[in-house]
Length: 230
Length: 230
Image (tube, rainbow over all chains, first blue to last red; front, side, top):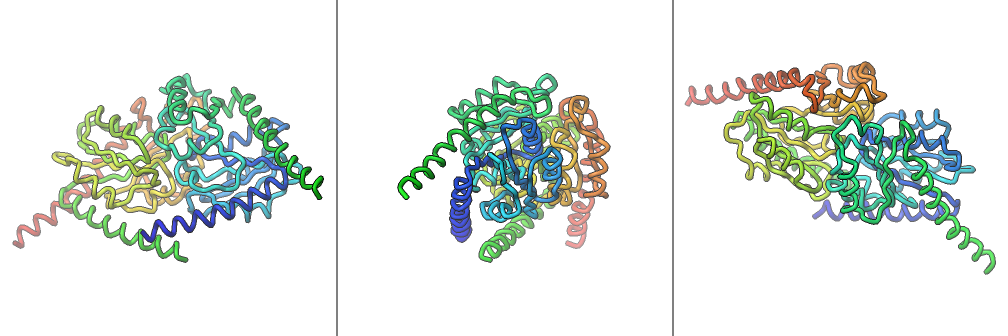
C-alpha cells in the first residue's frame, strides 16, 4: 500500500515538473521528442544520422545510468548536447530534464531530442514535458516486442523500426512486425529505416517536420492572439 | 526521503524471500541461473539452444511485462516452464519466483533458468535466490554496454556475448568489447557465442556444468553430514 502511495506522489511531482517543461518548450517554440528504446536499439545512431539533415536543427539531452559516451558521439556529430547521468536510475524524469536545460544552449534550434535511458519499461511512466514520444526498436530485437512492452509503444506518436539493413542476415519478418504493430498501435505511423545506410530516413524526417509545423502555428497563434488582445 | 525508506523496505522484504528461495533450491540440489539482458538480447534463444544439450536438464521461469510468448517457445523446445507476467513491472522479485515455483515441476532437473524481464537496469537490484547471475548482451547492442550498465555486469558470474554470427555485417569490434569487459568485470568469464549457429556454445555449457558441480558437493555434503550426525 505504502509503495503505491509513494509511486503516486512521485508521478504527481513529475507531472507538475513536466507541465513546467512543456510551458517552457512552448514559449521557446521548440518541438521536443522523448526517444525511448532498449539498450542498443539505435537511439544515439538515430540522432547522429539526423545531423545530416540540416532542416532538423536540434539540440539533445542524453540519458544514461553511467558514462557520457553518447553525448560525446552527438557532440562529434555537431549538435549541442548535455549528458544526464542518472547514477543507476532506470529512467529520466521531468526534474532531471528541467535541471539539464539550464546547461543546454537552445539558441537557434527547432527540435530538442531527449534520449531516454536504454529501457523499454520504466521510461514509459514518466512524462518529460515532450511534444511527442518516439519509440525505437530494431530488427535484431524480434517482431514481438510491441506485444511485450505495450506501455512504451502505446504512448508513442511514432515508431521507428531500426536496422533494416540487417534483414538479409537475421530471422526477422518485416511483415510480421508490421502486423504486430497494427494490432498494438493501429493508428501510429511506423518508419522502418537504417541509421547505418540512411534507407527510409526521409519519411521519418518528413514526419518530424510535420510534427514541428503542426506545433508551431498553435504556439505562434496563441502568442499573436495575446499580443492583439494586449 | 520517504521513497528511500520504501525502497529499503522493498529490498529487505525481497532479501528475505530470496533467502527462502535459496534454501529451497539448495535442499533440492538445483543450480539456479538468473538471466538478465535487454529486450532482444537473446535470453529465450539461449534457453531454446540449451535444450539441445541434454546434460543441462532444466526447467525455466519466464518473466515478461506482458504475454506468454517466451514460455510457449521454451515449451515447444521441450523444457518445463512457467510464465510470470509482471503486468508492467520492470523486474522479477523473489516473491514472484516463490509463487511461480508452486506451479513448476522441478522433477529430475539439474538447473532452473529464470529469464528476467528484458531490462539491463532494474533486475540487477533484486536477488531472486539464484546460484549465479548471467548477463547476456548482443553484438548488435554495441561494445560499450558494460560501461553504461555496470550494475548488471558487475553482479554477474558470467557474461554471454550473443549474436557473433552477425559480426561480418555490423560495425562491432569483438576486441573492443572484450577490452571493455576486462575493465568493468576483469575476473568474469565471457562467452562470445551464437544462439542461431551454436558457435561458442560448448564453452558456456561447460561453465554451467562446472557451476553445478561446484554447488552440488557442498549441498550434498551438508545433507550427508546431517544424516551421519542424526
